[in-house]
Length: 100
Ligand SMILES: [Zn+2]
Ligand SMILES: [Zn+2]
Image (tube, rainbow, N blue to C red; front, top):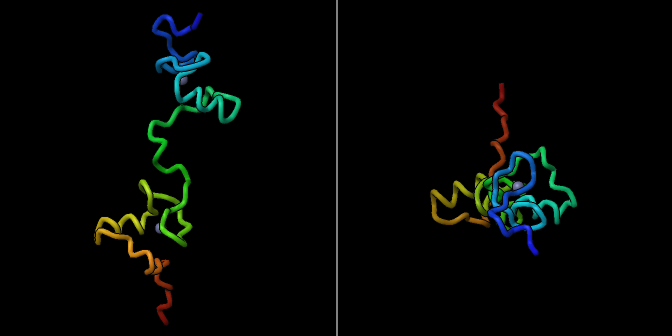
């Protein structure tokens, strides 16, 4: 009774992924469920985890995520120091006040 009898592929033109449900691959199906439309001309992003516009997870930080959990600055802190030093405020580009 299912379409998935054969090795079915996603029905979205150009998409070669394995069929998952309702004629779509997993990603397109998720799109379809979430948006009601598969947006066939929008290519799928493979790394959805990255750069999805979610904010940094450090409390009080509203920057956009750069890596898994942190904004760029916090990420670099994490790399450098092993922790994000959440209570240290981020420096926003040293105010340029070179008196001239
Ligand atoms: Zn697809
Ligand atoms: Zn941050």
